[in-house]
Image (cartoon, rainbow, N blue to C red; front, side, top):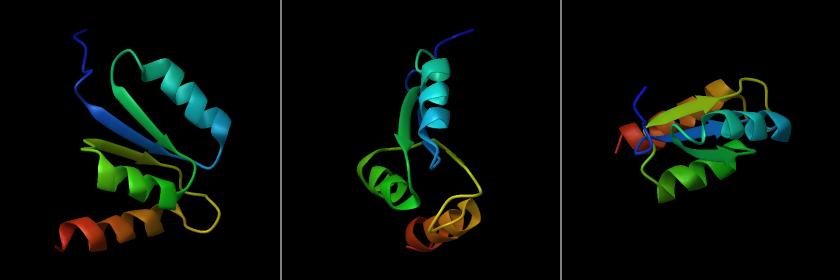
Length: 78
């Protein structure tokens, strides 16, 4: 399998052990960015060129669907 190291993946989840496991499993294949909240994920998206976004559904403050709606309003309707 060829390396996709030039592919930037953002994983948003409020559970730190999930973020660490994901990063450990995929860091050799992709550039992994992790965020413990939707707000932190948004900041990463503003600073980095992210190709793939994975998000947990159940998070405090903002669900995964609410996060996607926010991204739609911010980044796609410009």
